[in-house]
Every structure is written in structure tokens, then in C-alpha cells.
Image 1: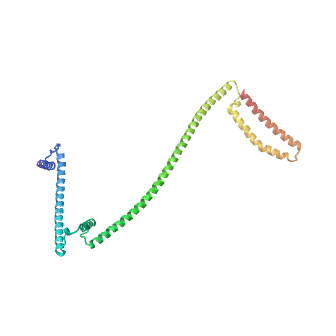
Image 2: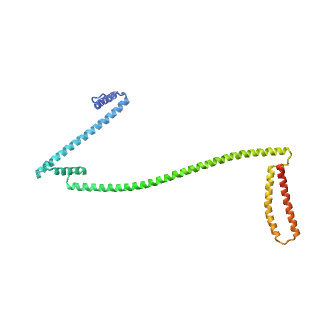
Image 3: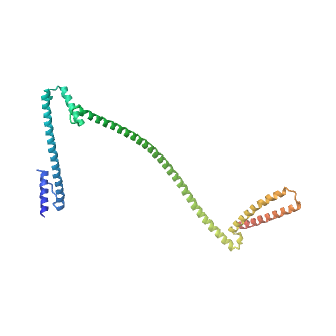
Length: 278
């Protein structure tokens, strides 16, 4: 409990120090907010201490630099009786330029022995920078080339995609049309199937021979086509016999038998077809 009260007192003192004469914003005092504010105050105290140390160090270095500058100035006056105040306007400008160069190059003094290595380092950095710039330019040119190729490829892909979409739309329309035709054909097929079945039932009630049904006629038609196909080599064979000089009476008998057989088959088929039409 005492530790909590001590933290609250430290937080209150820190806030008063931060805001000074300004009023402290209202906040809810609880263990959580007190812990957060105490942590912030500790970090602020450590940062202030580090900043004070840095300031003291810089003040000490500035004092040392001023002492060194005064010592060098006194030494210069004693040795050559020279003072920066005695310089002309151009001399002051040259001296200031020399000082600025030494500061920019971060040399320990303005002697030639310090300037030459610093300038060499700066020249090396310049060459490295130029080389790096050339590499970047080459890489940039390569990237631009790749970007151009990518854009061209993207354009081609877009055109191909557009063509594919158009082709797909056309094919979809064709498929829809075919589906409609298929549905129509299915409906017609069912209609014909029912019509054929009704006609067969009607013909069956009238005492029609089963051999005259649609399926029987189709089978007979197929059989006739098969017989005609089988007679083709027979006709060819017969034609080959006609070119010879056989017994005329025997050949005539065979021809007549074949003709009678064909006539019989065709007559039977014609009769069944006629009866089907009736």
C-alpha cells in the first residue's frame, strides 16, 4: 500500500514538473494508470539524465575547442605576429572557406596532410557513387525493358481473353440453340413413339399380322439391304461368266433363277410396305 502511495506521489510530482503552471488534465487514478504513468516518468527521468550528460559533454568539448583555438591564435600571434582581424576581405573569405572545407571534410585540422587524404576519400566516394549510379541506371533500363515486355504481353493477353470471351459467347449461343433443338427433337421423338405405339395397337386390334409392324418392316428392310449387298458380288461373278462361252442354256437357267429370287424378295417387301401404308 505504501509503495502504491509512493508511486502516486512520484507521478503527481512528475506531472506537476511537466505541465508547470498549466493545469494537469484529469485522469482516473487507479493502479493501472498509476503504473503506466510511473513507468513513463521513470523513462522520462532516464532520458533527461542522458540528455543532461550529453549537454555537459558538449559544453566541455566546446570549452576545450575554445581553449585550443585561443591557444593556437596566441601561438600564431607570437610566432608570426598574425591575427585574423588583420586579414583583408578576400583573406577572410579564403580563411572561412578553408575552415568550412575542413568542417565539411571532417579533418582534424586545416593542414595539407589532412586535406589530401580527405579529398582522396571524397573522390573515392564520388567514384563509388558514380559506379553505383551506373549500375542503378542499367538496372532501371532492364526494368523498363521488362516492364515494356510485360505491358505488351498484358495487352496480348487482354486481346486473347476478349477473343476467347467472344468465342465462348458464340459457342454458348450455339449450345443453347442445339439444346433447344434437342429438346424439340426429344419431344417429337416421344410424340412419334406414342403415335407409332397407338397405331400398332390400333392395327393389332384390327387383326394386322405382327410381321407388318414397324420393327418387322425395319428388320425386313435391313435384311433386304443385306441381301442386295450379298447379290453385288454374285452379279459381278455373273457378269464375268457372261464374258465366257459357256453352255448358253445352263447360263440362261441360272440367270432366270436369280431373277426370280430377286423378284420374289422385292414383291414380298413391296406387298408388306403397301399393307403398312393402308
